[in-house]
Every structure is written in structure tokens, then in C-alpha cells.
Image (cartoon, rainbow, N blue to C red; front, side):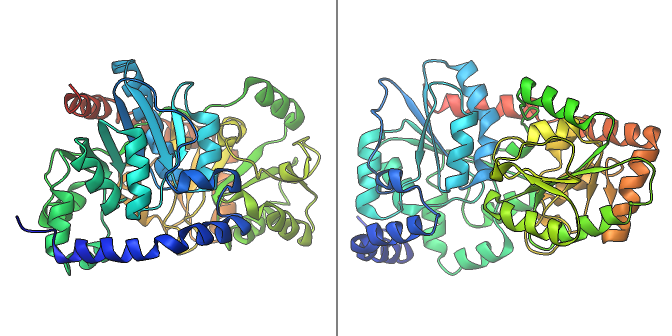
Length: 422
């Protein structure tokens, strides 16, 4: 019997050689805030809770965006087969905090194990998944092939591969084919992704973009009432999931609206809450009065800028905002964030040009948002929405229609998944 392709054999040997230093690397990351010190055992494959009896599906997403996209799938699986236990893994502290707030009762979250052989064995021996679902481009050979050898069915959903990733895999075609052919179900995000994956040896079972399939973000009703009362009649402008370099543009735009009658309130939601203090200092340095959730200063409508640097509250701010800038789009690098969250809640949207990660969705949303390039454009877009209720209403109707198209596709995907677990 022939052994694994050379690329996979080399990967396994290299990761095995790293095993002795993995605990120290994790402790180093924990000291820098990149790991949860209390849960490092999970990263080493040591489960913190028992495995439930019966069949179990393991769903994995890398970080915040991917794990959030799993939530509608989790709900759909629970509804379709309540007896199936669900385990969700992710790799970042922020995603773990979000899952603690958003996963339904009974669904287990664990940090993803490091993909070295001994850790993968420990994880798989404990959880013994009947189904393993990976999202987007998370391909971990030791874990995936180990699960397959133990009899788990593998699925790759909302799959995508960048041109750079494809270039890397083509240097090890045997490894790519062995890895991708292990999946019993592959649903790519779009046609180009399906073509790339097929060339590397993956099957093509249709299209699914999980980020198109979610429902509206939740919001605490009591908090929502408090914010609305505090804002009174003053319109709230929102900049959501912002990155370095974007807050400056937003603050310049709002400063350009200073001559308008009435008083505007700006809420900044940095993509990474750890930046909250720096974002607040930036706004204060430009002469704005500032409050910040992370400093224990709840929104009271008195400060002209509020920094919402807590996780899980975006649904609240989208419900109270008159207009939202979808962050990650004004500067190169992040590639944009989902415009579907504001679309599902009917919040008029503005976006910068850098939306590579969401280009297909933005293409469908044409007419459902205002494109901008700089602070002057952004100020004009905010003013247009504030002044033109008919324009805002037409935009949001177009965006909501696009945002609600993913439900039937999700039902099809769930049926295909459950067929893998008789």
C-alpha cells in the first residue's frame, strides 16, 4: 500500500517536530492576549467538558466572521435533528467570547486544537465526531484526515480559496488532491471558488455562502430602550467594524457636518475591541467629547462620540442608527465586512471601495448602498441619508431583498449534511 503524498508526509513530520514547543508558544501568545490562559488545554486537545452521548457534529470556523456565519447552520441543524449534539470550535479569543453569548443552550464551544499529530489524536479520541464541517478555507491535514480515518464524514461549506492559496497548493498537487478528496460534501461560495477547488481535486456539490444565510443580529430590548431614550431626537451615525486609518476618515467626515442644524451623535465600533482606548483617544485628540463602553461609560447621548468596544452589541447599534458605514472598506487590507447585517435590519448603508472579500454580495446590492472614497464623500453620503428619507427607504428595500435570499440554500445544505449522518 502506498503511503501519503510527499507533501502531507512532510507536513506531518514538521508538525510532529513542533509538538514539544507548542505549549510554550501558547503560553507566549496568552501573555500577549492572543489566547485564553484558562483554556490553553483545549488548544492542546484536552476537552474541558464531557462528550455527550449519541451522534455528534463538529463545526469549525477560524475566527469571528467564520464562526458567526455558522450560527444559522447551528440553528438549522438543531431544528432538523434535535438528537444530534453540536460542537463548535474556533481559534480566537474574540470568537470564543462571541460564541459564549450567541450559541444556543446545549451547543458546546471549544478552542480549536493546534494541528499537530498528538494534539489532533487527543481531540479526536475524546470527541469522536460523526460529521466534521469546515468553513471557508480552513484546511488542517492532521485533524481532517484523522477524523476521516475514524469514520467521520467531512464537509467543506462556504468554501473559498484565494489565488495565492491555489498557487501554493499546486506545488503539492498530490497533497491537495488527497486532502480535498476526503470531503464527502463540498459547497463553494461562488463559481470561481468552485473552479479553483475542482482543479485541485475537490468535488462540486453546489453553491453556499453561509454569510448570506443568517438572520438579524440580536439586541437586548432593555439596552435598546435605554439607548433610544438617551439619544432622544438626536440622529446616530454609526461606523461599524472599523480598522486603523478608518476612524480618522469618519471623524473628518463628521466634523464636516458640523454646520448642520441639530446635533449628531457618532458611534464608533472598532472591529477589534482591544483598540477601543486608542480610538477614544484619537477622537478626543480631535476635539470631540467621548464616552467608551470599555471604560465603564455607557452611552448617555451627552458625548458627541461614543466608542462601543464591547462584543456582541452591533445588533443594538444597527437598530438605532440613521446610517451606517460598513467598516473594513475605506482602507486597503481588511477586504471589507458583511453588508448583510445592516441590510437585514433596514439600516441605510455606506461603503468604501475596498470590499474584495464581499465583492459578489456588493454586486448584488447595487443600488442598496452609497459608495464613497474619502471623508468628503462620506460626509455627503451621511447628509444625503439624513436629508432624504425617500432615498434611504429605496436603498434599504433593495438591500433587504438581497439579504433575505439565502434561506432556501441553507435548507438544501442542511439536508445534504444530515444525509451524511444516517
